[in-house]
Image 1 (cartoon, one colour):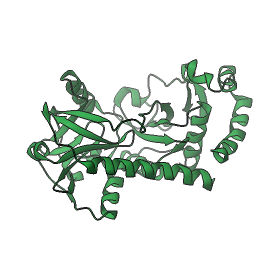
Image 2 (spheres, rainbow, N blue to C red):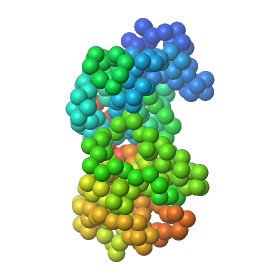
Image 3 (cartoon, rainbow, N blue to C red):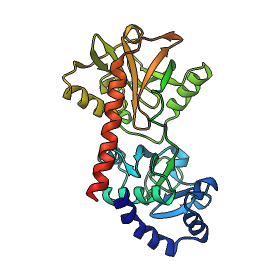
Image 4 (cartoon, helix red, strand yellow):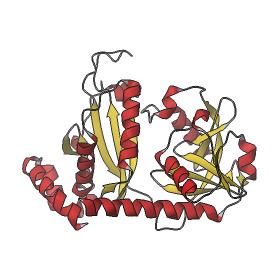
Length: 324
């Protein structure tokens, strides 16, 4: 921790020399920053307090959801699996023909600094990139200056008892052959409505099927299930987002010699499974204990995967600190 703090202290001093009086007061107070709810946000290359972090009402992210986002886990002020998240962001930007105005290295350094400026070592980081302001209408022509925002948010406590989720199958269906399924698009209205439907039914998360009735994903997570010691997950072709944590779980299972299958499945296999869990960068691995009001079996393998994943995250944060 000392290495990172010393590295970023100089940056914070330089930033403090030019920051607004409001931010300076917050940084000077250290831990009191959170108590006073003075949250610092990265906006287009500058650190500003949340009440000054303003985006135009003509920004295409606001008007059309024309943009991308990533959510990362922060441990000891280090963004976990940064390279994988950056690659997905860059791939999505290329698909949308959206210019990323910063390098990966610069934005990661700014993310670390943002955590320290908010006096947060354990949190979530959201990166949002929109196409910016342009002429009215769907055409992206004229929107040449992207808007880039980074913000920090509270994070689940991984030291607590293993979390559990209740799932409800959504009535909405993911479209077939959607090229945006590989992107973290800022337009997530289907997922918003599906989550609201699940919560209104007393569940925590919605399970999304595609138009063929195949299991695809949850609204904010990838889905796995266990059958006779083998781990299954829907293939990306079913409409699942190529999750960073999904890929990490797949790699860990292979390293442990576990039977692993990308399986096209309907709901019946999940109902009969020996265990079911969700993966996401924000919470890691969480066990599913109920689907559509029916209790599901639980497996000790879920907690084994969860613990291994979190240990790898902690090791990455430690390695990055020591390397810097």
